[in-house]
Length: 319
Length: 283
Image 1 (tube, chains in turn yellow, cyan):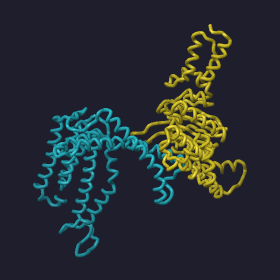
Image 2: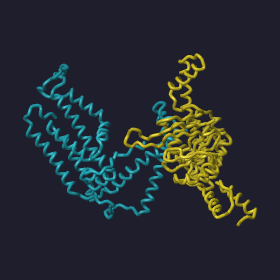
Image 3: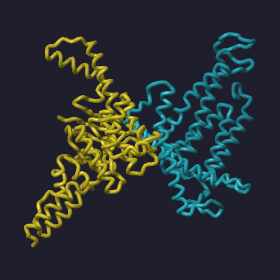
Image 4: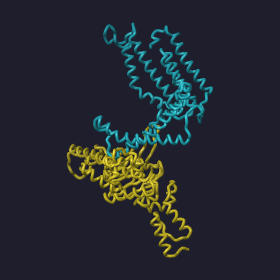
């Protein structure tokens, strides 16, 4: 079942003014439970707007955002009408007032907990650090959730392990950390809320290669431990190929393509039309293939390429 | 918050846009003086004519011009009511009498009505005229350039006008950047469950801490980076600094200047020569 779903979503900034601009148009996507979905697209393709719709920071101008099948912006009145109709069809008699009260508490609860259930890590999240110590900063989200002291401490220990921060780091001021450590501390602050859906906007931007790997490893480890659904925006096709199960390609506020990594990267021609690219290693394999070396198609990661070329060499068939 | 653009400069190619910023600043001062000199119906008609011509020439859409009045609606209503009810002129013609208090009659008078109408017109002309001249048709950079140019003589008595001008243009330049930063940080903290709207004053103030600290940190960082970048390009202040765009005084600037002087003089003359008409001089 789809964990998170967008149905015909459109978003317009500053509607009705001379500054109005359409950011998203008729976007329908569903993000499967437990899957890691990569979102790619050019600057201005609507990726960041899309992410902000998911945890309720922005409200879609048209269409719906559904979490576990529930429209996150549904009004009490609309839901009541829907439920009453359903009950009537089933021949059940229920008290309208009672039902209305139930629905109101349910929707209030949903709105309050939405940002904890869909955890959003913004671009350059280290800018959000503000507490005296890293420990306190990670505790900020859980505290807002109203968790107990012990629970918060347990969660800090857990996420510190996931992102690789030691006890020494936790007691430092976040402003004394290095760039990569700051990034990890900030991500830990969102992981500590244990969101069911983890959304990350370019989590590895501006980090060195080892920093990138460690960030992505942490994300995968979090998913393994909590079974969360993960969405990652990235510009790096290599990262997409290496870490994502599915890929969503955005172009000019619309869904351009979606499917498994294989489905998407096989259509390199289509991708190039939007100014995007396939992973470099795929280019290399294509070049080798066109120069007559018999290698399989559909290689998107360096590891796959290495093993394919190695087995080709073992066969001794380098013509 | 992206819609906030300071000064709300409206980009267009018009005579008013092309006027020299120095001239426009002085013109604005002359215009403000003229609005306060206007004391009767004919001079107000002259003012309105001038503002209408300015609006047409500037090619700024009417909706935008009217929007500049939105901020002062309360002031306009307040001024209108005060003048309507509290105009005290001896031997006023009463339309409605409310009663006597402290030996004075209170009520709505013909004079009060005219005075309140003129007051409203004065505020409207003042706001539209100044926003057109200073903000809609002049970029903040032009404005600081103009001011620093006009204040240049102060350099003679060792007031670092050029430094102040640079500080002002940097401050103006960074308002949109900082507001973007603030928005980003606010979104990040909202995503971690900060609630800005609930609770009392103290709770609301406390909710600002997670926004203000990162904002301070990032603006200090930006300031430092900018300082280094400026030093790398050998920035220094002083008289030998040249400008990329040198301000030039054109014939049209002189014409506009004369026009405004004529407006001011016309208003003064009308005040003097038509004063004998009943109900004429109201303010």
